[in-house]
Image 1 (cartoon, rainbow, N blue to C red):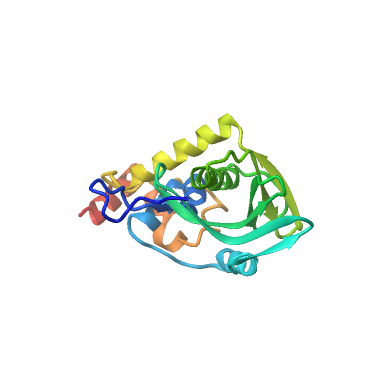
Image 2 (cartoon, one colour; image 1 turned 60 degrees about the vertical axis):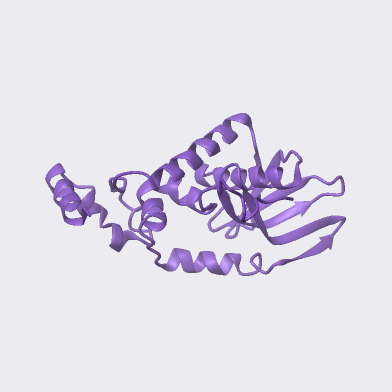
Length: 214
């Protein structure tokens, strides 16, 4: 595994956290509030998520039935400008790598979860120089996991989401809020975003833009 030297005359931009992919696909404004303005907050969902990740976040490894489980493995990609960590990476006896992302809720498919674990696979491929074809999402409530194939289509969607996140940093303003009943109320940044105002009628949106314009 190699990383660019600190003395590189053409340093890459500061890498962005992998977790922003999930935020961005849930709501681009949520991701922008975090990465551009530095907002962080907690609610019952983020607190439950911390509990779910508590064991996986303990760095280390163990071997079970010939499979090495690497916990809280730091990963990065200089090419994509990303870094973060994998909850678990299973290293199989044949040397193949299999990232597993822990999530709340029952077993179901969400694009943002699939993209997040695919981005982890892209980082692993760059770091270890080997193909990573499969991963999984482990759902805490149902104690089941769902296998994810890193198809060309999923890889393309992941690359597009990564490019969009990097674009947030050069955008002239934050993405407009799009109020979604239920989904917005569950967001930990609901009181910061105030989507009913910023995503409301044009007059309200324009007033908000003038108020917060630098």
